Amino acid sequence: MKMIRILSGASLKAVGGAQSKLVKGIASRQLHSTYDVAVVGAGIVGLAAARELILRHPSLSFILLEKEKELASHQSGHNSGVIHSGIYYTPGSLKARLCVRGATLAYEYCEKKGIPYKRCGKLIVAVEQEEIPRLKALYERGMKNNVRDLSVVDAKGIQEREPYCRGIMALDSPYTGIVDWRMVALRYGTDFEEAGGKVVTEYEVSDISTVKESPAESTEGMKYPIAVRDKKGDEVRCRYVLTCGGLYSDRLSQISGCSPEPRIVPFRGDYLVLKPEKHYLVKGNIYPVPDPRFPFLGVHFTPRMDGSVWLGPNAVLAFKREGYNVYDFNAQDFADALSFRGLQRLIMRNVTYGIGEMYRGVFIGAQVKILQKYIPELSLSDVLRGPAGVRAQALDRDGNLVDDFVFDGGVGDVGSRVLHVRNAPSPAATSSLAIAEMIADEVEKRFTL
Image (cartoon, rainbow, N blue to C red; front, side):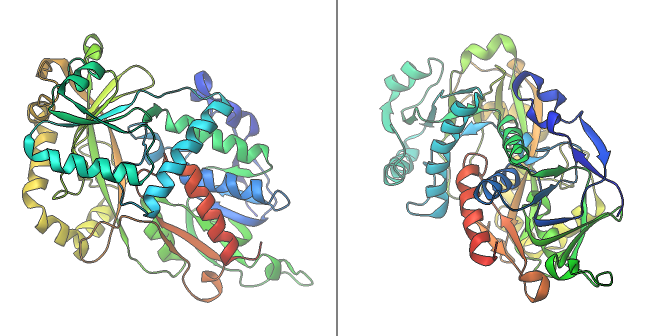
């Protein structure tokens, strides 16, 4: 067995101001190679699921494998930081139930662990008469989803809550908040390790297969029949595997013999940021009324825990699955995306929308023009280019956005011992603790722990 890298206990316990030190305690040490359950992927969903499983089954051994040097490096660390209240989702749907419960659990968790958050609220603002019916329909959805404290306000009510915002009607959701989701994810990791779990970084899984043979007079192969190998040749043996691969969930599924669909297509969202002297323009989250003709929510104003204010994002095809810059490119990722029939069909149905998103990404004045519908005082000189995130969008072959959770196990000896979380759609961070409960239930249903 080769040496593999494990994140030390001290490195996971820092939260808040010491967040930048979280990964500086990485050290090489010999690990025993067998575990009851291996969890692949240390984003917020993988961390939450690993935490939930070890808390339910403290007598079992767990290992969490992450390909990066740091935990929660991608979607979990590149998002708007909003705690959503559950307004948008179809009443009775899994997304609606998980979001509403997840928001409650998130606030309770932050209180318990001392993680700072702000319940700054959100306005979903109608600026044109044609948006009023959609806004009222959203209100009905929110009420059916049991969203807390939701109300409809008029133009005067908008200005009472957001003095610089203009609109004719809005939904007021005071239960919406903001938090540093990466800080929350890292705290999940701390909980996992404090409960006895192992966290291994720089372990990029390249193969999940059955153990071919055991040493003479050894029963290890029978008890731990699954081998999880990385690109450096390291190996971990286990009884069961759970993968939460985010941007690579489809590829992780394929290496264990599962279907290549739904396919993950990366969409980059570029934000603008308000200059500090203009932060007074925004108090809470300000969102547009979503247009059902288009696949994404649209640009919005989002205050951050560090005091900054993000504006956006747009949504454009990323040429690399972890490509946060305009010029980031990976030939395999690009070819996989463009050759997929599902993306081709999505593009054909949304040509005008897609061109508009690309245009606004290049010419930020066009983005500001949309934002001025909500805050007329905003000007081009008030904004700077900001960070970006990449969304793992699952698509089916007909070009439909897969908007619900997808589990996959495959068939055969490997498939009966592997569970893949193929899709954990937005708002996965808000819903993470509720999603973790659902994943743990699914693990218990499929496997004999």
